[in-house]
Length: 475
Ligand code: NDP
Image (cartoon, rainbow, N blue to C red):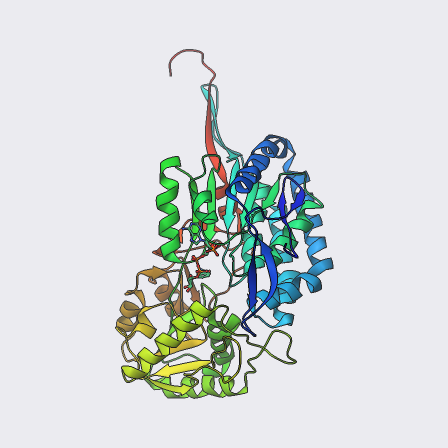
C-alpha cells in the first residue's frame, strides 16, 4: 500500500499492480512508496478522459482559463508542502523546489490561462467565406521526466487543458510523487476525468504511446525514448510534441564583458546541478578570454555549496539517480583518460548520495565524450578557440539542436551569429532562459514542435479550414 494515490476519473485510487520505492538521491534510500498502475487502470484513465472530453471542450475557453487561474492559486497555497515532496524525490534544495512551484509553475499557469485561440479569416467577400479555426484533439497524454517534474508537467498540462483536451499524466517513475499531489489539487477544481494521473515503472509509458484512444503525446525526456515514442505512435498517427536532449554550446567572443556575464554563465551551467535540457553544456571561449573566464568560474565553484535538499544554505543538490550518477562519472573518467584536466571538481563527493562536485574540464576538445555527449550533470567542458567561424562550425557539429548562445559586447554581431546556430533557440548574452510567451523547441535530434505561448497552444489543436460558397454555383 502506498502513501500516495493515483487519480482516475476524479477518484483517488491505489495501484492494482502494487507499489514501488521512490528513492531520495541525497541518501540513496527509499523515502516513500508510489502506486503502480495496472494496464487496466491506464485504460480506465484514458476512458475517463475520453468520456469527459466533449463537455470540457464545450466549456467556454474563458471558464477553462478561470479554472487554470484557480489552480495557480492552489499551487501558491500548497507550494511548501509539495515543494518538500519534490525536493526529497528530485534532490534539489528545498527553496529551489518551492520556488519552482510558487514562481515559474504559477507564472506559466497564469499566462497560459490568458491565451486565446485565434480564428483567422482568409477570405470574406461576395464569393466566399473562408476561415481557419482550431479544435481540441481529444485525449492527450503527458509523459514527464525527473529533472523538473512539476514545471514540465505544468508546461504540458496547462495549454493542453486550455485548448479543450482532457489529459492523462504519466510522470517519471523516479519522481512521481509531487505530480500525484499537484494532480490531486487540480481535481479539486476541474470536473472528474479532465485530468488523470497514472504512475508505474516501465511498460506503462509504452502502452500509452500505442493506445488507440490517445490523440497526442507531449513528451520531455531523452532522445532515444523520443524515437521509441515516435515509432510507437506512428500506426495511430498521434500528434507529437517531443522536447528531447540538448548539448547546448555557448560561444564567448574576444569582446565579451566577463565581469558582466560570468555569474550568468556559471548559473546556466550548474543550475539544477546541470540537469536541465537547455543548460549550457559546451563552453567555447576565445583564447584571449579563456584563462580568465575559467578562473572566474572556478572561483564561483569553490564558493558554491552542494548538499542535501534540507541542508541550510545549499544551492546545488545531487545527481537525481544512480544511472545518471554512473554516466556522469564515466564521462569524468573518460575525460581524465584522454588528457583532460579538471581545474575544479572531477570527482564524486565523499558522502552518501549521488553527489558529484561541480566540475570544470579544460584541455578538452571535440571528439571527446565530455564534449560530444550530453552529460546532464554538474560538469562542463571549456574549449579554447581562435577563429569565430571555426567555433560556430564546431558548435553546430552536434546531432542536438536545442539551444545555443553567443556572448559579446557587439549586439549586431551577436544577433547575426545567433541566427546561424542550428538550434531551436539562440540567445545573445543569455542562455537557457524560457518565458511563458517564448516558443521553445528543438532543432535536429532535440525534438519536434514547440511549447509555450500561442505557438505552443496551437500544438494541442487540430487546425480546420472552413469554406462557404456564397455564390451557389461552382467557383
Ligand atoms: P527517459 O527519456 O528514459 O524517461 C522520461 C520519461 O519517459 C519517463 O516518464 C519514463 O518513464 C518514460 N519512458 C521511458 N521509456 C518510454 C517509452 N518507451 N515509451 C514511453 N515512455 C517512456 O529519460 P530518463 O529519465 O531515463 O533520463 C535519461 C536521459 O534523458 C538523461 O540522461 C538525459 O540525458 C535525458 N533527459 C532529458 C530531459 C530533458 O529535459 N530534455 C529530462 C530528463 C532526462 P519511466 O520513468 O517509467 O521509465
